[in-house]
Length: 156
Image 1 (tube, rainbow, N blue to C red):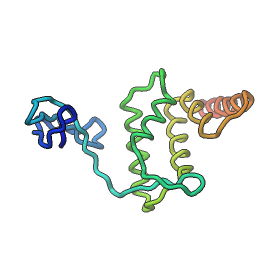
Image 2: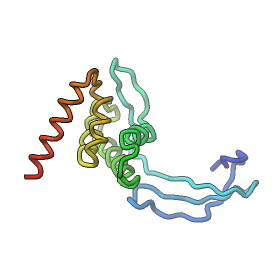
Image 3: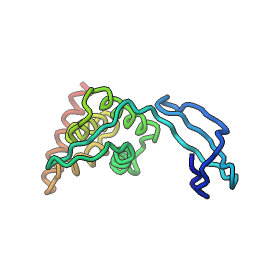
Image 4: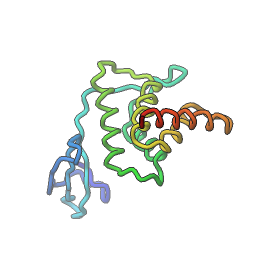
C-alpha cells in the first residue's frame, strides 16, 4: 500500500480488525520509509458494477458517491454514521448479488429512497427533492403530505 504522506511503495500492517457491520477490514498501517501511520479499509467486491445513467451514459459504481449522497441528505440529522454505513453496504451488497453487471441509476435511487424512508423522514424528503427534481414549493408540500400520511398509517 502506497503511503499517502510520502508515496513510498511499502507499508506494514500494524493492526487488523473487522468494521462494526462486518462488511470490511480496517487496517492500521505504518510507512516503512517515513514512519507515518494511516488507516485503510478493505472490502470484498463481488463483481464490477456499471451504473447506467439517463441517456444511456455509463460509469463505474462508486460507493463513495453513494455515501456522499446519503450524508448530504442526512446532514445535521440525528442519524449515526454507522447506520448510514450499514445502508450503503446493504445497497451495495444487493446490487452485487442481483446478478446484473449493469444497474440503472433509477434502481439505485429507489433503493436509497426506501432505505431513507425507514431511516429518517427529513433525509428522505431531502433526497427525494433532488431525486424527483422538485420544481415548486407545492411539490414539497404534496410529497411531505404523503410522507406524513404514510407515517400516520404505520402508527395505527
